[in-house]
Length: 119
Length: 119
Image (cartoon, rainbow over all chains, first blue to last red):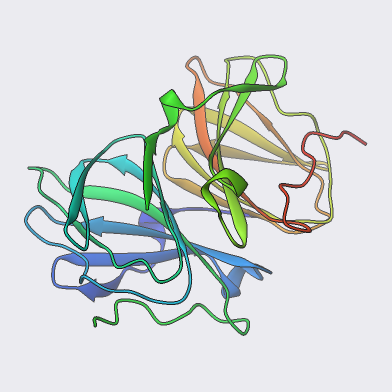
């Protein structure tokens, strides 16, 4: 059993103004899925992208807009998001403060699948 | 793509003073794992239990104690927890306020595995 505060986990740059921390993954011997914490600065976003695996997300803090094709949905604290495999999506921090969100992905061949590839 | 605030999802009683909301699961066509939000009242806890699947947890709000055998670890906002399959565990809200935490489990045979079975 491992406990670690996400702020003490090494942050990786995922995109301009976007950091990712793997808080439960291969290093913690996670068997099936990986939990990451993303922080997105105001005015920044994850690339608009798609991939053959799902996202399950949870907004811990902040406000954002979730974009999918021509659709846009507002996101706020306490919102849970199900992005199915193949659904195009991007999270845009349209608020004034940092957006903090959990994003869980499945392990693919025992590894965290590549993230942030745009198409 | 589905967005729902966890507060609008039907709460199920998981134990005395403990509610569980499935925010991304079979109903949302989740392929691999299920995201749930637990709220544990001050002084209450999940049963001390074990099961052959993992938990990946994240403390959104509050303070608690994670118990495992003879070990105890404090939990606070921002803490991520990896509980491996077979590790005995229980979360005790030792704080004054409601504990809110995410807990992700794998789908087993396409269903959310039984929870809260004590041993």
